[in-house]
Image (tube, rainbow, N blue to C red):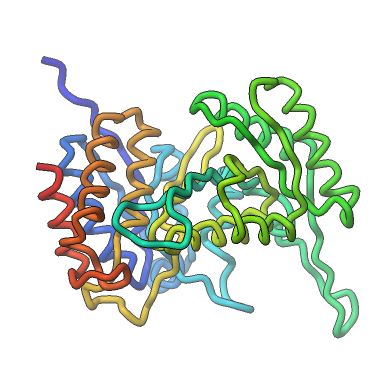
Length: 337
C-alpha cells in the first residue's frame, strides 16, 4: 500500500484570537487523515518583538518553498504603524486572485437565504499599490494603478473558474463612467476575455449601483469580477448577507503560491477566552484541501461543518450558541464520525 503524501504547509497563526482558532482548525483538519507538516511562523507585531521584522525572512522562504500557507488573522494598525501583512504577502508572491465564495450556512436565519456568490477580486493593483505622497502640506496624492496584464489575468481567472464549476454569469464591477482610463482599461480587458467564453453570460455594473443591488436582490448575481478596492469592499458586503466575516473563507491565489486565510479581524477583546468562532478559518482550510486535491477530506469537513450548524448543538455565541472555541471543534469532530 502506497504511503499517503504529506503536505508541507506554512502556518501563520496570527495574533488576538488567531492562535485559538488556528489550533481548533488544526485539530479538525488533522482528523481527516490527511498528513501535514506545519511550518509555524509569527507575523506582524509579535514577529517584530521576536525577530525585529514584521515578516521574517524565514517566513518568506517557507511560503516560497511550500507554495501553500494557512493564515489566521493579523492585526493591521490604522493610520500608521507597519504595512498590512496581508497586502505585503500578496504583492511579494504575486497572489493576484482573491477568491471568496459566499454561501449561507444551514440553521442560521438571515434576510437572504440561499445566497451563492463568488467574489473574484484583483489582488495586486489599484489603490493598494501603496503609491502615496504628500504633494504640499495638507494635500496627499494616492495613485491607482491598473494594467492590461493584471486586468486580463484576473478576468481569465474568473471566466475559467466559472466554466469549470458550472457558473453561468459574470459581472464586471467598475466606475468607468468617472475613471474612464483606469476602470475603462479594466473593462476592455474583461470584454476581450469574455469573447472567448460565449457559454458564460457577461454583464457590467457600476460599483455604487452594485452595492445597492446586492442588498436589494443578491440573487441576480453569480460571479462578481472586481478591481482591488472595489473587491475589498464588496466582498465584505457580501459576507454580511450570510452572517458576517466570521462565516466566509478567503483564498489568495497566484501562479506559484496560495495563501488561505480567515478574513475577519483579530478581535483582541475576546482573545484567550475560548469564545472565538473558528468557522472562517475552517472554511479556508477546506479551500486549501481542495487546492491540494484532497477532495474527499474537504467534502467530509464541509459536511461535518454543515451538520454542526444545522443541528445548532455546538455553535459559538456569535451565531446564537453557547459553546466555546474548543467545544465547537469537538462538535465538528463528532460530526465527522
